[in-house]
Amino acid sequence: MQANNVFEWLGQVFGTVIRFIIDSLVWLFTLLSNASSDFVNGFARALGVDSSLLSIAAVILGLCLIYVGVRAFLRRRILVGIIWILLGLWLLSALMH
Image (cartoon, rainbow, N blue to C red; front, side, top):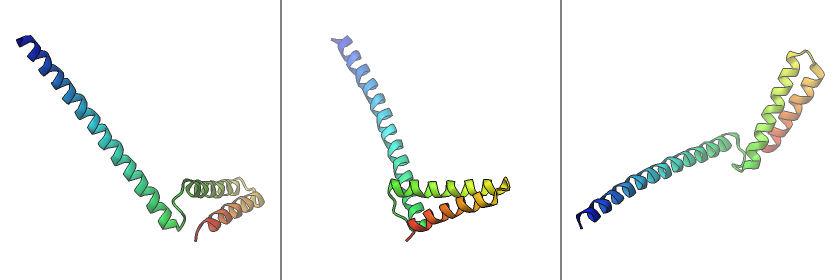
């Protein structure tokens, strides 16, 4: 009868440890999820765009277009740089309200 109590106690200890680990991971992932959500909402609010995934992707695309335009300027391709920068600015200006 005594051996059953030891194994029952051991099972409770392992269960408690596993439960603690799972609760800690849930807390950590909830914290990270809330932080990323708050970051995206603040980023979108500062730019004046919607906080949808499509809008954020379009902002990133617009910034990439401007980056490509600046790189074209550095390679002394002035006309190509102007076109890329104008496309990036057009996309960003269309998103902001």
